[in-house]
Image (cartoon, rainbow, N blue to C red; front, side, top):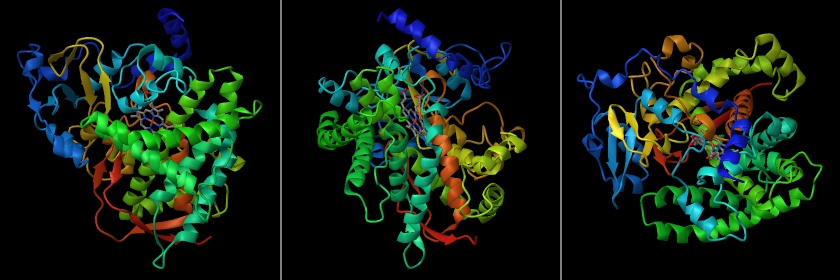
Amino acid sequence: MALSQLGQRYLKLFPSGCKILSCSMHKGPSDSPYWHKIFKDKNIRDFDEIPTVGPVFEEYKNFKIHEAYQRWIEVGHVVKELFPGGGCCIHVYHYEDFSTVYKNDGMFPLRKSHEVIARYRRDRPHLYNSVGLGPGMGAEWAHLRQMLPQGVGKNVYMPFRPQLEEVVDDFIDLVLAKLDENSEIELLPYLFRWAFESIGVITLNRRLDALSQVGNEEADNLIKAAHLANEIIFLSNVGDFEKQYERLIPSQDYFARVIMDYVAEAALEPEGSSLVSKLAREDRDYKDITTLILDLFQGAISTVPLTLTWALYQVSRHPEIQERARKELMELMPTKDALFYDTSLELKKQSLGIANYMQYTKAIIGETLRLIPPTIGNGRIISKNLVLGGYLVPAGNMVVMQSQAACRSNEYFERPLEFIPDRYINRAKYYQKGMVDIPFGLGIRSCVGRAFANAQMNLALSKILRNFEVSYYHEEVGVINRLHNEPDRPVLFRLKPTPQ
Ligand code: HEM
């Protein structure tokens, strides 16, 4: 298909792409850019005048790069990071610059990431037509993305709500069985299994048995392979690419082979309701289907479990926040075995209005994503020359929108380091200006799993808090970043079952 035809088709499929960009990030036409207050002469500066930082190899190697990103906000509103092997990237911290980058995304937003996965797939053309959603560029990316015009949205996961709830119930049963003598447990490995099982339900319409009481080696190995891939994607951006590529091969061979087998079985059910059956019915190319499903598994396994762990860590340190959420949840689920997804919930939603239903629990998730999102920020290779923060940045440069660092700055939020879910209820009071909390990115290349991720976080957090009082009695948990923000130690939660 010619590029222009693909573009036409693409615009039809993504009518909302432009709408997202007309969000509150925009300034009014008469406002002058923020950097006029910094550069009083209002003259645009040269690329070479951007303050430089780095190289910072050690901080990447120690998985502490987020600390450097946070520090650099003091160096300038725009900074140029020099890479150890040459080259650079531009970090921006102001919402007007985020807005400029997203507004100029164009039809095929370019993101330079997952190159090691791209190499792996390019080297295996008998299995892959393209490098996939994460690393894909231009028309190749759009071809895959248009297979999911609404992302992993309601049409994909809603038919599976009862099964998804069963998966959470199995998770809760497993957790109860695995509590130690102090009623403590490291939840994260079980949350990974839950997320793996859930993505299997909606894509393949099958249970993968990851929550089995006796354990499941295959599920554990797949989850391990997904984590290793994340680490390698991260390290290959700054370290020895070839070495990281060699590390990737065996685990990626395993991951891809097993998931491809699952897809092959699911494709045998042409009438089925799984995503694979649906795509097969649409006569999608088989290699494209497997690539997409691999990317969805990879995207789903870590992000939501990590966010839930951070949310539980926060509420365990703020019992009053936890109690307020539980009170709200007891109205939705009067008994512990009440269903989250049942018809009375639908009636409740209607009577409360969609905005008010589970308002506080959702605010806890929003505040967690503001303070400790799975991804630090979001990058683009800009395809036009752009003025960012008063500097002319030529096309072809990589720009990172440092949303996490901005979210932690008092430029945007009052008491930014405190966990205050009410920010997401009384936005007028707490929002200082502009929108920097964009954990899923924005625009036509934003997270394809966003709707599913939110539904899963609402479901799991609600059921966990309805079933357990969660506390934490150990040392403070710090953050390491290996592509995603992870706890720097096992987070052992103490769980006390709630009375009926
Ligand atoms: C809390 C949960 C999640 C967060 C915060 C998150 C965040 C993100 C971000 C920031 C991006 C880059 C967006 C951009 O470049 O504009 C992204 C991309 C992506 N996410 Fe997520 N994600 C989450 C959950 C998921 C889930 C559950 C899936 C799979 C079901 C998923 C699959 C993907 C894929 C495949 C991409 C690449 C999309 C593309 O380039 O077209 N994510 N995500």
